[in-house]
Length: 285
Image 1 (cartoon, rainbow, N blue to C red):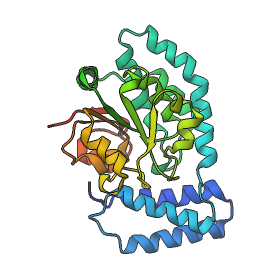
Image 2: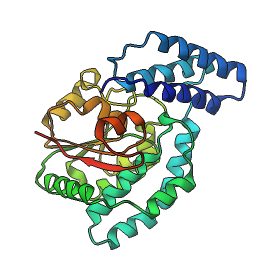
Image 3: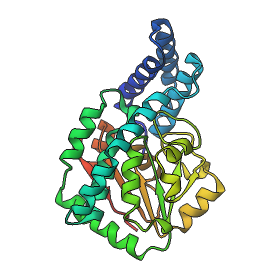
Image 4: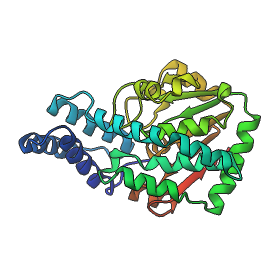
């Protein structure tokens, strides 16, 4: 997916929100914005939006001197999601189709994304989880995913955000964990998950978790580790969470099921959906 003009407000908002997460010093916030605007003046529109988002994040890191600006945010939402884990697991177990319900919780959790600006809080997440959307096309596509995972011998699950990872964990429990390898980012990038998050929420005790080698809020396979590349090209089923992973992987001719919540105008234009829609995109191969 290429960069559109609609991406620019998001980059500016990310720069401002990210700098405010670290410091209340307006002079530092202004410097982050100045450097971001300067970078955007020469932006290559052929770049994937996630690559530019990573560059904005590096500016925040460098100017503020904070290597993990969203660490407190990640810990906060991981802890919040863990508090819901037992109740959600019961809702899944008691539902008519635990696989579908767990998948819908996992997709709904994709709302916890600080790369699209602020405005995300625990009350909003809780409200979404209380009323998970059940559109017919989404359910139909999740049924295809269900059948594919039953037949699969090897499943690669590419995660996205902190907090959301707890809901991913509940879904993984429905996938035969022994089949699953879960991939996380290799270093801090916005509020995306790393090995620390996987360990903190207990995912490493459930499945094999690996760093993908990706240091952007997405997954460019050619820039990932050999271990990840081997899994990506060998897995029978790949589950990809979030917009950033969709932006960077949608062209790959692999059995990738994209689970995401539509959160920006770029994806709205590309997929013909509305902001806030939940999606399960099935592979075309």
